[in-house]
Image (tube, rainbow, N blue to C red):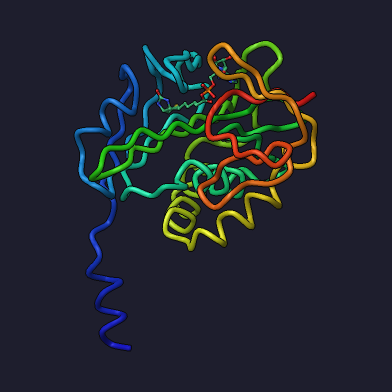
Length: 213
Ligand code: BT5
């Protein structure tokens, strides 16, 4: 008991770095140790996967990166954490989108090295691009909830993450088209596999952009 209490008190609290403007919170976080968190009002070069742009005017979104231990299903765990923190009907689209009312309200970008993973999460709050969604919540309040949920889900057993991802999924059970460089796979999104791969008509798909048909 005493030992447990000591450990909890003795754990270093995460270092939160707050910036007005950065190229990307990912770039700042990459140089920091595990446990660090970087939050910015604005990104001049916010990014998604495959060098895509993540847009948000200053102070309109939660833009945060968590430095975490490597984890093969971190992208799904972070999606679960973000959906739990947002609450209110936010659902998950494979592999890394947060949806609200069918529109994209946020996204997850994991960039990993063998030593650590930098997990970026962007959530639209007071602005969204045309066709996308925004979440009516305060930034600091949402960050606090997100910190708790990321802490929980990034270290949760993989089976628990996968089970909760399935429950929150808006992709499973649908007909989908997965676009990969130059090719596309169409079929029913049946399940996710042990490493978070999407099973489409019995075949595992490890990357790509999904369109719900
Ligand atoms: C993502 O990529 O959805 C991951 C986004 C991660 C952003 C966070 S913000 C904090 C951290 N720092 C960064 O630099 N990045 C992370 P992807 O699945 O590739 O989706 C990108 C696509 O989403 C773009 O090509 C646009 O079509 C669309 N998009 C861009 N900005 C958006 C926004 N604010 N809301 C909704 N969709 C957006």
